[in-house]
Image (tube, rainbow, N blue to C red):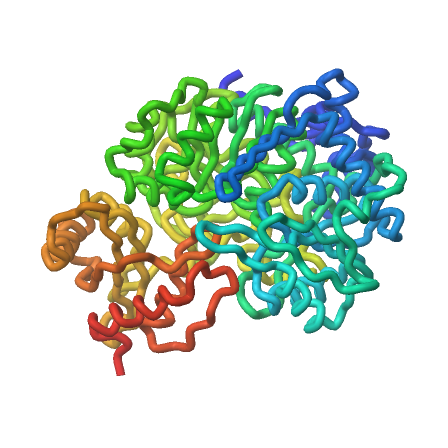
Length: 627
């Protein structure tokens, strides 16, 4: 069937369509109900188990010898391949250790781990016994970890002694100890994985070492749970305010992710899939851990960086060595590779013949990055769009159904399950080609969030109240005449220059097209005359010989040529690095706060706070903040 046929079939009977997909999931009791009366929970009365669908069923089907996880760690020089049969044993033992200490159905477990296979084992072990895990990005500050402990109220914490970054070891245990000391809620016990790079001091009576915790325990069988039982909580807030815990129900999670591997990423069971992310983010949950294992793929877990471990050829080595068929990462990773190796000289000698496609998500993929990746890899490059809240792609190229023509700069079309609309401020639908707020018509599909943990009112105010009958994504964009969606910016990043609504994302595309620009960001800053003005920040390609003044003049002229004088684009500066979160997202809000002279709220996920000092100096050179 074509994409149009599949999408039409879903739209004609959404509940029936998803019930048919649910037939690919193992249920102890198949669901009789597709969608709850309130339109939020899918397959609520079905009885199933996440770990069984990810691990046990593949062993039962005779595929226990197949590789489930390939761990590749250039920062330690280690590699490990774990079969499905071995993974089942590891999950059962750790689940038994948790159960022996009283952890059971509905209990929460916080996981604070680096990129090691034990992180996936911990996640799966929790789901095996019906516990609800909440993974917190490894190395998060003690305060941020404490707020999540207080919100989730975990019975236990599973943590690593340290994380390893290029050139340094990050001690996790002191951060965990500090978080527990600060938190009002105290977990009953902690299981600590001691790494060779740095062993942690254990608190007597509370902490137990990973292997010691599992000695003599009875391996735990799968505990069957209802389809509406939460699989996990994932906190999205990186600020010091109240955390926002996205809840992922079990049944819809399994069904939707399993479908996405086939329909979106175009892989067959047994093939190798790699998502270069971290288990602390939603990509790590959905596409390092759960989706590949639900679908019977081999998932790659990489403890390294796109550059510096040891060079810009790190990704090429992993893809070639492990036979990756489908690869998923953030555009910022490719911008980093391109900046250090613009001619892709480190690609030489790596056999990339088994790679069929590259998928980019997590931030806007600028056309220049897409074109460069497509040129050097020689495979289709698919941008796609989704959020922590959605759990799987909302808009993408449905390559597993039908590979649609690529329009560079667009993540392509709405995928089955998602009714995407572009609305004006009053909630009326915008015509094709006109900018507006992107909203999703309710009900949301399986796999998406039904609420926030212990925060129903916040769920409504954050997502539902703005446009009744719709979920507000917080993104702005437009749909063209062919039904392709164009994500232009976050709603907050659509700026008003002298009454004209302009997309900072569109300006970033122009800046990125300059041959000497490696990365860029455009933000809106306050202006007494025009309301707001765009301010641009660029980093330069390695080996650029053109002077900064000339580059700045060329960029201003380029924006004037392609967007017009209406953009009033005159403020641009060259920086060494852009401030980012550890997941690679540019901290535009912090840059705006600096330029407007407002208090800068230091994001908990910032990778290097010192970068903001450089940004402040550069902004001052441009005459901001205005006194």
